[in-house]
Image 1: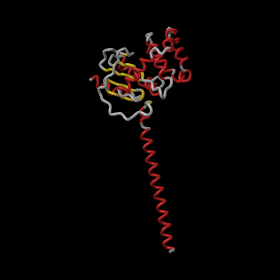
Image 2: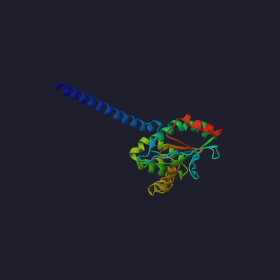
Image 3: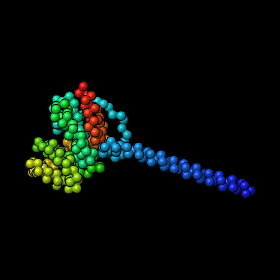
Image 4: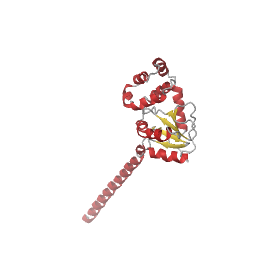
Length: 236
């Protein structure tokens, strides 16, 4: 009888050890899955939350760029469409780290045309919509790129001060402030921003920054080398 009780105790201990081992493995798997899900962060991009899985993206994406602000030769062989969010830190990273190289090597030499389109992620960047509208209001006075640069360079400032800063920047850049303020206060460019936003989704954009290079998608604040590889292949 004593031997039987000892056997039962041993079996119970073994069962407990096995249970703990299985539980540990399950939690380890869960942690690994969490790490895999966060790998997107390494690519550098702000993603819209709760987006459904999307099918693989085509490499012949068509984007209507008529009337949108651009830099470079209008007849360049390569067109880069940038869908961007002024409040996105990764978009700011692209502006600071990659754009200067693109501008020097490809845009200023007439090889690439860069087109800007608005893609404000309103659910996670509450001021992005109005920032885009402000830039479009500046575009109506012929100073889109000056305003574009100011928004990215002063991103940390206006994230706390908001619309008052947008109006101050217009004054700093020598815009007609009455015209600009009316444009911004009356949402005169909202439809234009919304149209760009919807076009970004249609083109496969699910986060910012998002690029379409001669119909080929590229997501995130990618390093210059990644842009160079696609551009050089297209130039050939």
